[in-house]
Length: 243
Length: 234
Image (cartoon, rainbow over all chains, first blue to last red; front, top):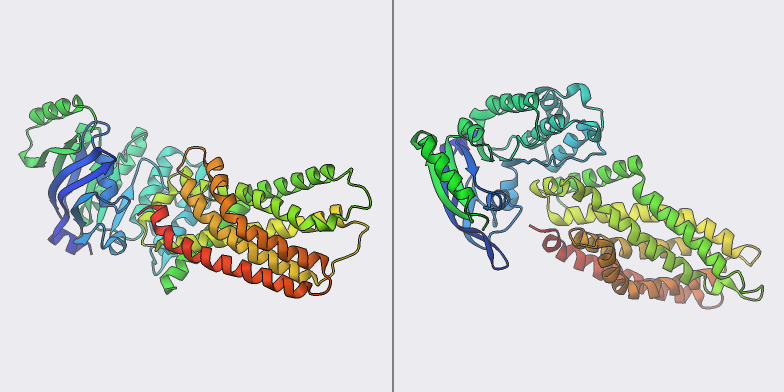
């Protein structure tokens, strides 16, 4: 699945608009992201970044326009698409009263994995939480929660991984672990990451996008980006306020 | 249900049961509410006198307690999902939304039945002491408890999903839940009365009310099934 994602356009967005009442959180957003790319999305608070990710992850329907991920339309082929995407948010999206292992086994069942126990063990080892597998998640630190959240998102081997401010609230050690995990799986996945950290976002990305007031201000390949100019554009958009 | 849907149904139900066994939030809050209601009933009926046959009002008292008790539990049933954003992880997975509804409603039904069956002997002790026993077999009471609880769980799960994101969700749930419960409550009280009081023709009356209960369960179950995808979001 990862190979097919890399061979084609992983994310295709055409005139995507999402309105909440009269306010347009996304206003005719269009871009193409090739398979295997790493897209960093920047923009001020309220620019529409999270709305864009929610639409692309099938959690929100667009008001108009189209979007497809791995060739599946986010509205009409949402169920097929959900097999191929994962989301790591600043919220861990884990049940605090279940153990680490129970959480992952539960989501394995949701994705219909064939050998859930082996896959769960494998992932718990890779995020260095094997020794805490029988502990309830409410006893975990923020860094541990984020590592477990990564394991949850990777359970079903998604082609495209969405990261919504994944470094938010992490200590330097946890950030290093997250960096290491992203580096490990970088070649097998397409990434779409929301970030407020320009340095981190530019360091990781192959493509960058700036959103402001729900519109695409800039979408460029990393090698085409002039960093000082990019920073100036970003600073200018932060001043434009919300959509 | 497809085999994958069956796996997902079992996983959601098992998860809810494991979490309830650990936190005991729903069962303990509903159980405590049921006991407190019975104490209040006993105080309210303390001056009714020996000639007053409490069995005549007991079916109504039971169902008033169970309806309000269930609102307390149903409100809690989606808080776990909402608190840590877990509902998003669930919605991100390739699970048909009606599977979530059936699993959550089944979990709510189990917790509701546990509290109802545990509180019935206390009801009986407080209100039937020294009086004649049931006119009909006790299993008739079990049938109406089960039948009406199916409807409460189905409608309650739908409404709890709708109101979990609203401000003042407790009030909102009550405002929507109680009017929708009216037909079921009426039938459940009628069937319980026939089961408890007994007498000639009471079994026929019981089954007539039960037909009403089953019809309500079927209609509301289908409505909830049809609306759930819309209610829970994408």
